[in-house]
Amino acid sequence: MRFSLFIITVFLFSCNKQDVHPVEIIGHAGNGLKNPSSIYHANSLEAVELALGTAGVLGVEIDLQLSADNELWLLHDRKLETETTGSGCISEATFETLKKVRFKTVNKERLVRLSDLNFGLYSGKTLYLDIRHYNGCTEALIDQSRIIDALHPIIEAWGTVHFIVTTNHKPWLNGFAAQGWTVYSDIESMSEFQELQHYNLNFHGIMIRNSAAGKDDVTRIQSENKKVILFDIRAPKPIRQALKKHPEGILVDDIKAALIEKSS
Amino acid sequence: MLFVWGKSFGQNTISTSFNYTKTDFFHGIEYGRDVYTCSFFAGFEYGVNRTVFQSRFFPKAKGGVYYRALNKEKFNLGPVIQYSYAYLRYSKIPDGTVSYHELNGGLRWRYGQHWQIGQTLLIGGLWERGRSTIYQQPVTSGTLGFTLQIDCIYAF
View 1 (spheres, chains in turn blue, red):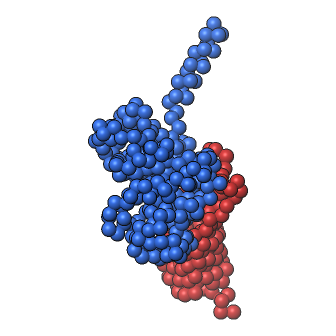
View 2 (cartoon, rainbow over the protein chains, first blue to last red; view 1 turned 180 degrees about the horizontal axis):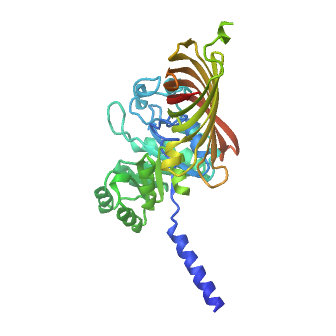
View 3 (spheres, chains in turn orange, brown; view 1 turned 60 degrees about the vertical axis):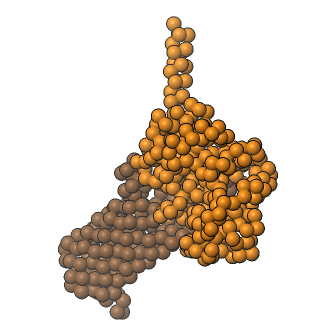
């Protein structure tokens, strides 16, 4: 009798554990993109390290653009003048110009290269590398081999950091996956997911807007053995809704609001 | 002597305020005690978004001094300095806490006699302090802080 009760109890606790899906909280562009309560500017070294150092945060997403001299720089905007002291586009500038550029904020954070990050400190953390596939000024497509050459030494050198390459340019998915990298496709709708499968593209997960994917959509993607990251989540209510869909992660601008919701 | 000469020596005030800062909307109460033309105040607030909408208590304690440079019978205006400390536990896991220190200066005005209304506009330093899991030590991050506050005051 006692043994039966023990078995039932173990079974019930096992069921509970399965229901609690671990959702990873990921900082959008470091500590949040256009987040009024953020201390540091999006995609700055300070923002990345503040987010990664926050208890409960396992990863951050950063936006990367390739310079004329084949270095990957952290910046979201197409034009430098939008939020920095520089002008023009990263695609048409070199290290000599970009090293002097700072964000127009109180802290005047420096524009940094991917290689400037202190990867030695990020052991066990995940960096989602959102790669811009076109020239910000001319919109001309960038040669993927240049991106691969710039990323390769960093990903190879820092094995303790989990790198996930993300792109919304579908023709690049197979090229990144062929390097043995974890690749996520950034999509706008579920019809794009069907398209990815139709063309038999090689990817490990998708990033999709929270409003574009319901719980059933998330479950369907996961049933295809793909990970799901939901993004464009700002206020506590959408955070709560996103967590209930049980994706692998949510990309958020207010990290503390997300951690509060997760631990509630 | 001009700085310590005033019309309302010894007056007390109790006020309720609603303010917007970089970290949250706050609501709270404040007690003030006039000493000549200065008013020393202390108060307690809570972050509305975190406390009400996220069920996570976000308390703030503050104190400061207001100098009534212009001190008429029904209207006063002058500089104010304020220090505040807020604390947030955002996660139940170890190191899931952060504190905010703010040192601000600005302007305050108040209108009325027993019942008054007023505004306080502050700008200054905001420092967030918490333990970094990558540096394995407490880190402080600073930026520009601000407070836009509306006050409703009872003087007695």
